[in-house]
Image (tube, rainbow, N blue to C red; front, side, top):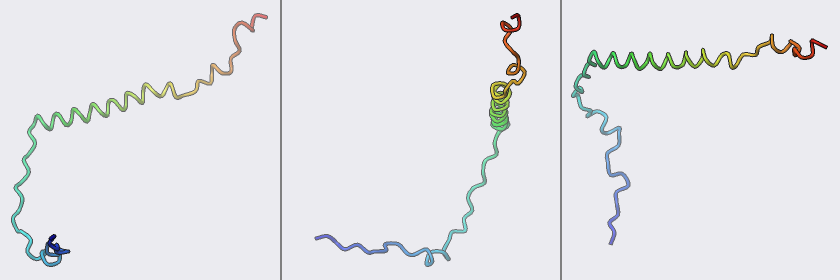
Length: 78
């Protein structure tokens, strides 16, 4: 036969809360100079890519009003 399982196998959080551990985790290791430099270079590369795409994309997004108002050269000679 199957044994009936307890509906709450573990103690509730309210009962366990006063018995929290007082052991502090170990301190984080400091990043080396190479890691810091690599992070800066990666960030600089991402920013340069975004700025470059904006600089190259702006002329394609702008409308040139000087070419829209000119008449074709072939019709000027008639």
